[in-house]
Image 1 (cartoon, rainbow, N blue to C red):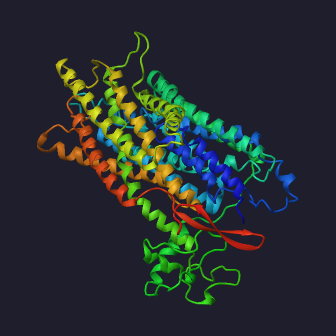
Image 2 (image 1 turned 90 degrees about the vertical axis):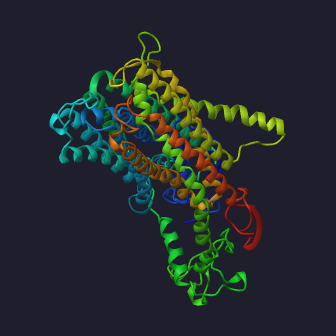
Image 3 (image 1 turned 180 degrees about the horizontal axis):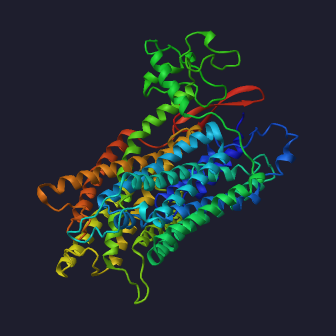
Length: 633
């Protein structure tokens, strides 16, 4: 299978063009991740051919499928799934505390685990789609699982015996009965079903839509059509999240859980129904091998050849014909033994290794090296994700403050996250439409802030967001005590909830700098063949961050409530000390910024090194200098 280089370059340009348009935390990063998967070697039509290959006789038959007619169904599936699943998340802390008698620490930890699973399972979904099922079946099964998950969650609200007896945990001295094992199982199964569904839909949806266009079209229409598709996809996903954070939250606040959880069931049903309705119209690509196995092969072969001597000349390494990697680099040199040719019998006449578990290519080795090199910088983004995942505490803060804009208009407590969305969107527009053109005009040449610099700036803003959150909470708590609300966490403090807006805005700016900078860093520094890995790394970091956030929260709770003291993260927001918890995160983020600087210095410049690329012209091989990350000089 030969990849069409012209189309790949066009798609790379599309990715660069749309990489600045993201607009909401975590979901914003996901959009770039999804868009970038189209550039992966795994993102193909049924069959990709080179520019020089003749048209296939079946082209006209294939054109009867796919195209713009499939776009409404694919985009609706993704957008409606997000409305359904993200709509139940903002108020989930209240649901767990009021209906399941959970403390704020237990509720937040459960949400941490759910978010971790939701961010990790798309990696599994991408692997299954690429290696076994294909994107169509993976999205289909994901839609079914998400639908079942919303049904189970709705049933917990509809069936009284599916949850503990009614009890107000926030009332001082009132003992509440905990949920039984069966009740917990039903609740957690709903979360897991929705996470599995997200793992099937989200890593495949955008790329599956791109598969519906004939990339062999040479009349220039493909670029315009893809641009239209990306515009509509981005707009639909953005609108769906806004609806989830406002409309669904409003229903839950004013019409109760039965309606608030029932509407997402109906929405998810239409998501699955519309996707399957267009089944005869879809182009369904074939599955191909995955990249993970290539990494395992390098490690195994390098270990098997650990006693092998390095060749004196660079001609002793095995590489694929036409590969940009012909000689391994000296960094992490012990891995080079995986691509040393021990005997001429190890390679077939066509240049392919007889046994891939005994001899790897230079490209495989350099792919693994590139991944290992970026891991330290990858780990610096975990702390930012930990800060962004603190959803329960801002929710309780907003609930205890005056949320009225006018006498009749009141913002739901769970909708304050929309200010993070707004801040992120505004900053990206200002950066792309004002700062970049102005900087380029002043410098007289193209201007952009480097990826590592953006990552560092994002960590700084994240630290400032936690610092400011602590200050605002300290003021709010003092006012609540002065107003006699120490033992009344449900009382409303005479302080406008709009004071919470700045911390949400700082979080949005931190997300815009760090998360998007991370993903662009992975794409620029990892080989093009590792686009799928670049996509996966941010999601994996978010999953790890949620697990670590749970560890931090649990330890803070257990340590600070010793000797009968009130926990910093008490369910009674007025008796607890949320400001101390915020400041602890700010201190950790400050140390993380120092750690980032060390890792950035150790990594070196992000300027792509020159490499030698093999280009075939008229049957003769010639070396051409190109700019390619991770290659040798």
